[in-house]
Length: 294
Image (cartoon, rainbow, N blue to C red):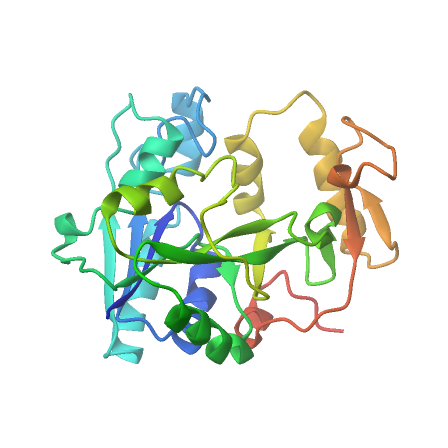
């Protein structure tokens, strides 16, 4: 049984440098694959990327502005972890591809990379900003051993905003934010069926678990935050309000912050609020610039 972590990525080097040792300590994989490249319609699709946008955020219209740093991170990881096979692959998506098409392409291109997927192999289709606590290794391994080919498991994702104290309030609800972690390969049809839930994130076909995934979706310093916002089409004023909420979160004074007031200011609308919590974070992320040392 091979354990393979495969991750479509664009401009997340600031997290990848800490994600790699986290993956090593929690999953102990045989392969870590980063498929780097810009989706032609940005993250959700449908966004027109003009020359000014591409000049700001890419090196050549496809590679992220941080790609050279990412290459350096991967080369250093190869030296640090010689028993793991690292692959940094440059993706060149066609302009006709949807975001789901791009995502599926970047999580199934094993043959292109010289990897033969066999029944019983465990595939972890990751994102560049997900982590697990270092004490969860045995828990993850236990779930891996329980599933059969054409089965998988999901976890509860906590989505962090600004720093280690604030999360999207909706992700505190049990089973609200339950997303894929691992699929034990049986057939490509089943695997692609799981991947196809990338946007709606139902994952009805996967087993629930008690595993917590730390999703640092809004840990984006400087230009990385600008990019994150500029990739997603929202109504006027949305991102200005969101960034103000991030500034408030970094003051660590409020228990609840309305980060999407243009949608709703109702405290009962948990999709529009972030909440301050106390939770132990993975040791690897504590060196990130968004982690606040008190």
